[in-house]
Length: 300
Image (cartoon, rainbow, N blue to C red; front, top):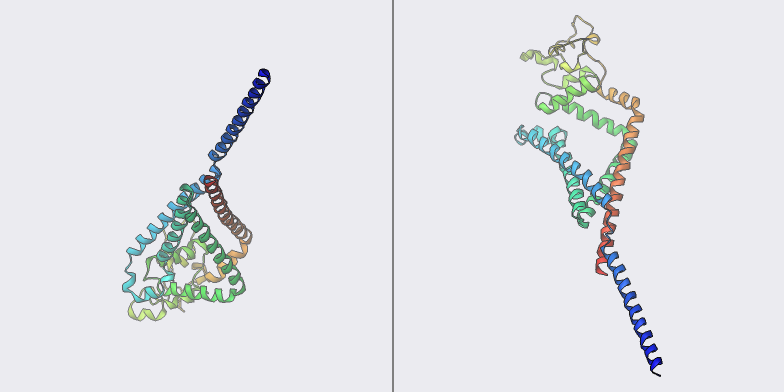
């Protein structure tokens, strides 16, 4: 009888020990699962690194735009305010501010694992993507209207060529370095500018019936730019063939030809840009899902 009691006691003790070990094992497994992070460190720091670069780039562009803005007395000139959207400094400020905002929300949101900032980051990228795609589709459908607006905008640049140094430098770069063109449809468009208009000779403008130096064809091995090469080239009695001195092709035609020649590189760039744009949205949403999964694990 005593042996049976001892055996029963031993079995009960073994069962309790087994139950305790099983409980401890489940406890350790649960603790191990709780200590295992659901957030991918690779994804987190990939988003963080990319957006740190984007953040500082946006800050740099914004600072340059603000510096250029403060150098000009824009708001005291009603003509400049009316065409503020054509001001390169204003464009830089807008691009810099948007890039800064995207970089800030992505960088801080990833580093701090903040779902609100990551959600804002994904939302801004989504809105920007939708706007870009809509603009591209509408631009393809209404390409004649876009061409007309581009022509009007470039004519406005010509009118204010001497009034805004940023616009002047931009036009000179387009005409001399990029497209090798002159005017919108040709050199005659410089009649829109009061300094280059042929009637300005009556008020003593030396540039009357001429074009800016950026319209001139560069001579081989020319070490110093001739800033007066465009003088008098549109006068009826000009003693040289103007086509030997200046580019007679308009910039609107030149940019169309440039786009046709570079169709494949442009399409490749657009594809890569949209690919990484969409990838950024997906990465941000995946990181948010990981953070929510981690929060849910902590609560349970």
